[in-house]
Length: 268
Image (cartoon, rainbow, N blue to C red; front, side, top):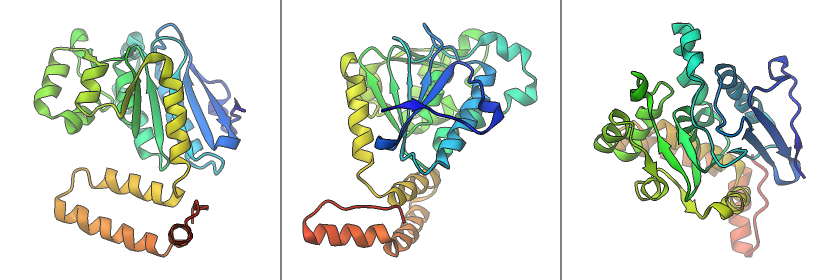
């Protein structure tokens, strides 16, 4: 049973536009955008989201983090007026805040439906798994405001779909349908809208069956080697493999395999 997450940090005493729930039995924490109907993301909300991810990353009760929303749209983007009120220094921090799902050592799933524009899309791109409803529309519409994406959107998207498609999306403020997103490798899974929550639940339960240590290692390795040469990536993979060879979880995994029983990983 999920309950409201209690934060010790006074900066998180009152959350701006979202809520956080924890289900200890399922080792799951949910970050829920809750400013319907469009779930516009405010400037203070960006700072708080970073702090929340950092807090959940340190919480031993949480194995998997889910980002989702209330209503038919994930998020139409950021609060436009907030950009004009923020200092250039503050604006330069936007990408660091929104990259917090990628920096988090734990698996992060985002469940998208409806509008997923601007920072809503950028936040989703920073997550590890994107489960999307067939109603999802992705877009980076900043060109219509005389701007460019500022929270990692164009950079992350280019890594996923290449420069040609990214120019088409960014420079034309073009919307991407759910089918395109799945076909292009942006989305992990695309399901009917009514099945979004069930598909997310299934992935949470699946990820919990793996070793927490192996999951953290895999995520960091893949993130760290995204821009490296093949030879360096293989070298780092070997070092990570060697380190895991000494773990309790690997020993348990081998013993469970030989005994033909489910493993009981402890994360060490």
